[in-house]
Image (cartoon, rainbow, N blue to C red; front, top):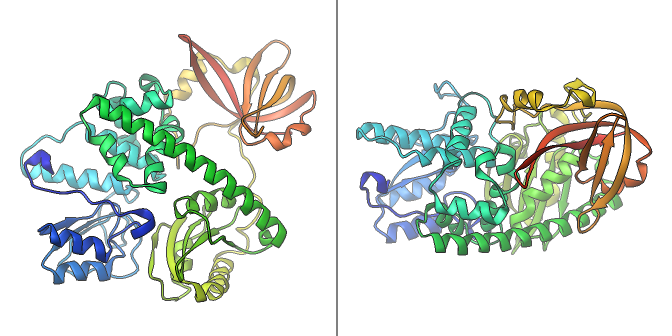
Length: 459
């Protein structure tokens, strides 16, 4: 709000020490700084006790959020949340960043000020990072943000793009998901999210370069921790045959809290069922849960009727803190609730494709049409194609652990480079000819644009 001349401070809860939302220590700190108004972003809907604490200390609270509520806020606390049942806002799927944007725009309008354009860039980053469905208003926010990114004067974004070797003039929502956003998220996962805030707001180019380098190091560490943890998780799931349960609960005391969601997400994707990944923190467990479309995992948590220290999230992504002695009760009740939601949900999810084509149909004109459908993401997925009887001219595993496959595929008259991410363990299944399901990619190198197939599955 400095744009309007307001005196303010920014407070981002430490993910490991404080969790994601309002907490008592944060409120007492803000009180010591003579704060008279707290405006939350992407949190607060479930912080009933914390809001009451703030009010008792003479601090007003405005909630801007998009999470599901488990209690009703006092009537004198404004809650701006389009996802609540009583909300009359016409688009219910705004992310926390989108809600914050709309709130800030409304405040500017009240003071007859034009909102800064770079706010759309920040809202686009937040919408993609939070896996908001790219339909309706979310689609508009992301499309505008991507356009503004092409010639942004945000020195932090430019420094981060150089570090990630990303061309902002051709950047897509997918590029952000796999390059800039993981680096921005790495700070909050392993260190302090204040680093990410600073790089997004600094006007000092040299400082931006330093921060971009630091985020690169944190992201490298995060990848290493995640890879190691997922290998262990896969081993535990296999040894204990946890995949036979309606949901998977996996608890490793020493896991870093910042990667629990990544572990749960990868296992949920692999086993097509809700997964809870947990670590130990003193006499409590801290957990993150992820689930496939069709499951209401936050509701399943609430219906365990346990005394959570913290709980919150979405239908398919949630988290909580709970006393260690309640683990077994949680597993039993959570499994029961997941089982009751739908006995037919848990099954191997088939890979679907939109169209069967021949390689000769892949050309710059058709690719241009596909690009007009962007931005792609949640609820607006990239088109997936099937081509049968492709000759495998070349193939090899790539990556530090050989986890990916690099190929040259063709049909006799047309050839394309292809990459199959995370399919390296299936390298021996490749024959001289395969059926392949894939997405199309553009590669930019030396001023030239080439088309590559990103293979999702093969047979």
